[in-house]
Image (tube, rainbow, N blue to C red; front, side):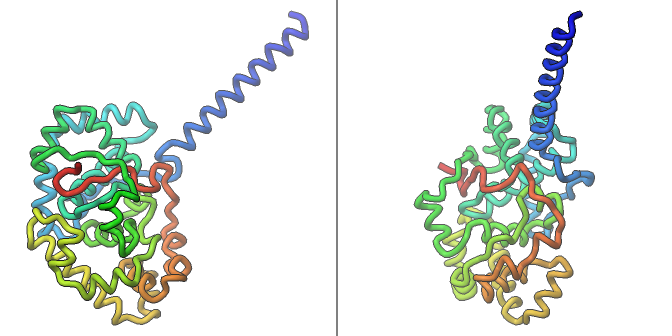
Length: 299
């Protein structure tokens, strides 16, 4: 073979190798498990903080989702994505937690992109998803694209940031583990407004419930949750900065989150320093909210 043909063939092989290597890098960079290892299994009962209060809702949810249905979804998702079994189970946990929150909050968003992908996959199985929705919710649970300018959304979150409120509620119901941090792009990165904290503190339980919580949910459950929010504010205002910083070192972030939102609004990001302590990288699969739902299943 003449040297010029050898050079041409070698050049083609080098070019093809570069293309294949670039494709491999792109796949690795978009892999959900790129920078975090899901070695642990998710907790039982969705990792509830208070099992006695919320177990009824979780039991209803688990009974509504048929095992065969989820196994079919799992098989399709794992085949389409470069993930392991544990990654799917943790993402499913986030979706289940979201479904629990739809029974509690009037308006709630899903912040895990991969959990949202599972939700989409469930909806494609129309018959099974309708059956699940009816058993769990009494009617179809609609997947509503998030629109910050929607009048209802503007009304609900006129006083404060939606993600900040979500983080506070989420932390009162569920234990936050490193896997949850990763999938939800971390918690407590955005402050509540001082006006909102005052409003929660000074408003009646009925007024808070009417504005933010589902009216068709168990009254005791909602009342206990609102009482806990008020108790957090009472505890926060009784602490000083040194005590708050000590709680941060002990990985207790709820009261520091409230404290810095209330007293250090303009310096919140510097004072909270949550991200540097956890050492948990941002997930490629999360970011802004992906979809949302509301009491009664949506519009």
